[in-house]
Length: 189
Image (tube, rainbow, N blue to C red; front, side, top):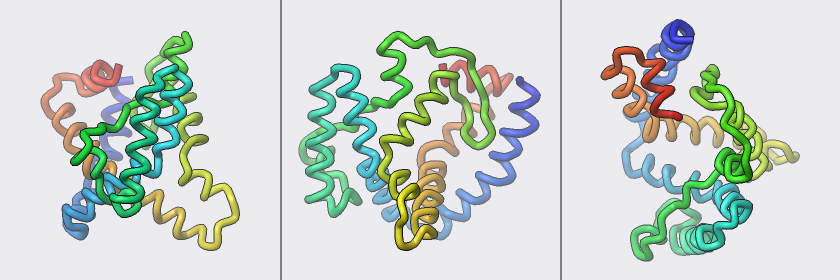
């Protein structure tokens, strides 16, 4: 597994995703990236809301509902986060992987998947559940006037997310580790 990490995933990171994200950083100003970093999690609120409910965490589901209402109205569709800034309502980190674990499903084997990165068997099922709760996926499935716009939104989301939330963390972990595969597995688990 360690050779796989070095030979494929790391090369994909180094020679494909990292240059794209650096070009993205050059072209897209930080305030716009920050607004997109607010917008896409706002769109994905249903996943966190329902997973909080499925785990019996009603207070967290209420926080997500309030965040969505405030950010969608006063945050101009979610591009700004007044729920956090003014009301101190933080994003509730709940997903289908956690819901499956809450209901007794073990994590299963650790996996490193091309492009998706590290996960577990349960996490892979969780990705499917999260996709089912993601409105962006709903728009991709249904006949929408311009499918290219939907695909562009997916690419923009993943590029912005990688540039802002994954690239530097992965690079720091990889560069400071004796064995990056073991370090990333340990950090993920």
